[in-house]
Image (cartoon, rainbow over all chains, first blue to last red; front, side):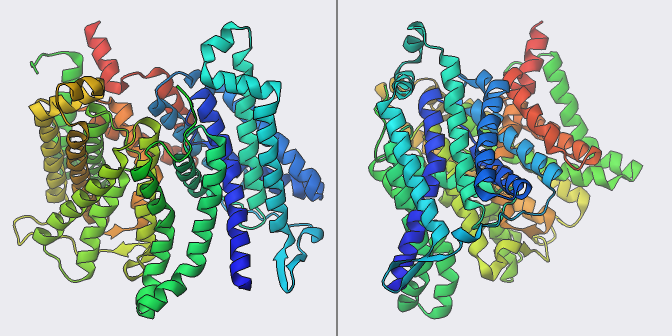
Length: 305
Length: 315
């Protein structure tokens, strides 16, 4: 029982983290119609920035805020210098251009920080376990991730649905020519949205950093998961991304935790220990395949066009 | 296809002649490195040609093509590890496994279009990658060494560098010829018609998904063959063969050379891999140059190298 609660919370935490990544991806796609493979690189940069700034300032919170600002700035610079020239081009061109960016970022990080990974130490107040139920302790840092992610999700909801900026964003998603004709600076809007997406990716990266090591290519595997999520949730839909992310996070975590035991009851233990790792890493792809068979547009397609 | 002596045809002819005569150069100069490099290039060119069939002619942007390289490679590797060394068994199994994978993946992925298709093929290839990483019996993450290359009962000796090179070149030529035949056949015209206007093709009675799926499987099988060659070339298979950056490399080769042109992918593979080799000798951080270069190619190099040559020849 204890293990189940713990793994459930782990899954929720992972899912929420994936949401931050997927939200940026789906926001940029929904509004600019731009496929950004380099989103994983921004996630990686967020983690590297955080590790560096926390080391320089010696303060976790200040370092993290600086890192967030740096990722936001990096996103804006990237959009301004390179990516805005690709809007309106074929999706394939986006994929190739941002693939080039991934190559660039990986080697840039190797040049600046070296090939070895970094670690991001937590401050003492985030390492104490908290009693969440009688007899069940859970790491406070993971709880903090859950809280921050939920807060960001709420912030995104309010931003997109309740503010003037959000109104412009939604308008831009449904008809970009029209909003330009009404005198809105669409280029600036795009730059801001891209920066927001970059900051979300950076936030996900720096929050994950203390749990795993900060290393080159850390954004690549998780980016694929984010793709799976937005395919399941429906591209361009933040609500779909939220639900799909939690779903995927739970399935992935619970599958890894309990599938080996489950298989052991059916198969011999040696066969189970061979099959379990492969099967549990396949789970979410099987889920995606199932969703595609039933709903090729994803579970919650955004109502565009 | 009318033969005409334009600059682009001249370049193609020179490249093909160069590839055919390469072993002669190596035996005269003793420069074995060029031959090993170009064996690899020819194999990747075959993979790029297969990708071009669905991407350039069929309009299916597969971002998971490296999966077939891995599947073809692993079929050879696993059979070799289990003591079945005959190429007459290994290679058909490699092709069949690729065909099966392509059939399943294609049937699921072809329900979607556009970006969805790109992401789904990517995700399925990544799944194949994780499965290979999970094969602890066959080396898992570390990969599997192949101690003996495929044995073709004395007809051809794959351990002989020159023979192996010519085998790869023959496969590449066969692949290009096959694509040429397909593209100019009724089947190929339907697939190209589907790329241009799916609704119209369906309106005149062609089942879109079935045609696409067959094309997808043919392409997968061709790439599986490249995988079997690659495994024999490196004497080693590992999950890294199907990592998604490898699929990206293949895509870049196709675009760089010229998508939807017969020889474009081959030219793209040569230029990309030679450039990579060259840059990595200049600096350890070759991707710092290659990355932005890719951006510029996508931005300004419409139609790839073949397209640029074509514009040049038209004046």
